[in-house]
Length: 176
Image 1 (spheres, rainbow, N blue to C red):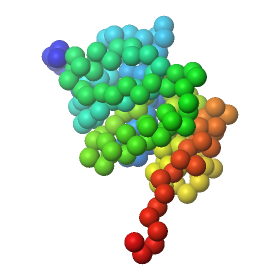
Image 2: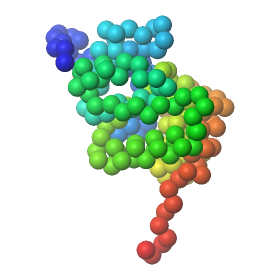
Image 3: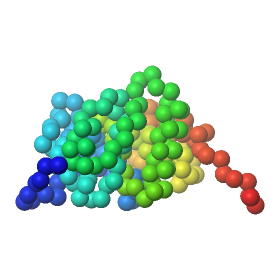
Image 4: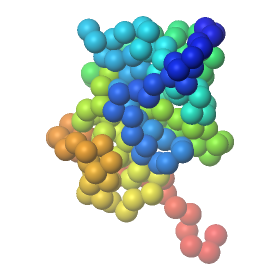
């Protein structure tokens, strides 16, 4: 772990950082930026900020394992659950949502990221709100994500929310 002093000791928040569930689940673009804009110094500052803010796990859904070593360097646990083209979206969402539920249930504070904050990440996050029964329906989940991110969700994100609905865990029968 690299020691940082002065005003940078607290780091900087990742771009487009947004809480989905306050103090439990947040989303953002990949720490350090995406593609050609990626900068290792910024990545380090953003990971420092995550640690200082009490995040206990970073969850990457990038198709590739780019820069996951940086979390190790800063002693921040991470998980990689890739969402690549051609992936069975239902199986991916089911596995991701169960993992997120388990981590949140243990008290973890999570950052979920993809390359950038776009339709897919918004759809995955909105789908989790629906899947976990925090919101009653897809339209509500979409509206909440659009409001908190101040972005409109496009067809790719809306499709993920639609896929998440039928994956909701079954509630036990009343009286059991």
